[in-house]
Length: 333
Image (tube, helix red, strand yellow):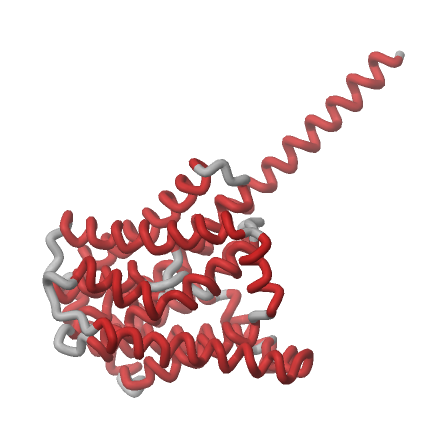
């Protein structure tokens, strides 16, 4: 178990770099990862969601009742900023239907599971981040199909009920099973939960490899616009999420949690939905795969920046306290 935990810690720590390397490998040397099939995407995503369910506790849901205003703010930010920003970007860059659909799918999905880790590293409000992820994921079967129909329904046929069932199957059901397993086994799952982050990371890496591999030629033909739109979508989510929280007079820790939660999407779900519900548009799965790789890189960079700001603020407070003590001693003399 120690060996497995060591491997889990390693892949989790270096997820951003590993995602970049896997995406590059699948893009430029697709034959090396051709053994990874797109049919694995749903089971892999289900495994990630099961891991998320095992980490949830009743206390996480109690947070929703204790701080409804914060959770409501996060919910509104999650399901307004990213879907609208996705649609605006598809219009500005005049994306073809398949790519536009893929970008919109990313925008309509709930928050990503790695957002909680990034919030922790950012010295943000982790409890808020966990609650936001849980709430947006629970409502995803309703919000994701509806918002996809709203923003993409004029360009493609959106099977709202089919999408609802898909989200329930690959997201909600595995989370519920994971949560129930934790409730039944209690502390006995701790040993297993220690290696689940690594398993989730490997699952995401396999999803990226599978999707990028089968679309490598088309991605290379559109590489510039795809990466630009994905980066603008992700970074725009960070900026607008932080700005909205600041506008609502949230403290710094809450602003950081909302920013990261909004900017980091469950892009694995977007990829899954593109493959299962929009198979006629193969390139629709690409934005989700690219987003999965990119948002872990940008999230790590943003966490480092927020961490740097926290250290600087702490140093300033220490200097101010020292100066105050010195002034007090001088006055007493």
